[in-house]
Image (cartoon, rainbow, N blue to C red; front, side, top):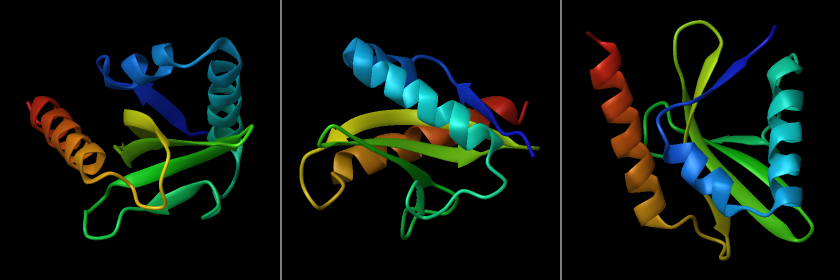
Length: 112
């Protein structure tokens, strides 16, 4: 099973461009790896509690925790939303709200 990661609009790209070159390489490597795995474990992919269909890709590298919100679309498409570098135990509520808004916007624009 091959998954397809979609960088919709500039939401993910804005986060991606903010990373240094080594971090960008690690994120791309993880996305390519996750695209072809038969099953993604909870270590890398976690459902956001209380939000229907929203997930968090979890990437750790050189002591940093990168988080990328995403959701599924038809077939094996995974739409990447916003991302951030996690600094605390809790995921910032504003980041979750931003991801929900992006998901709703995507769904609205793709219902047409």
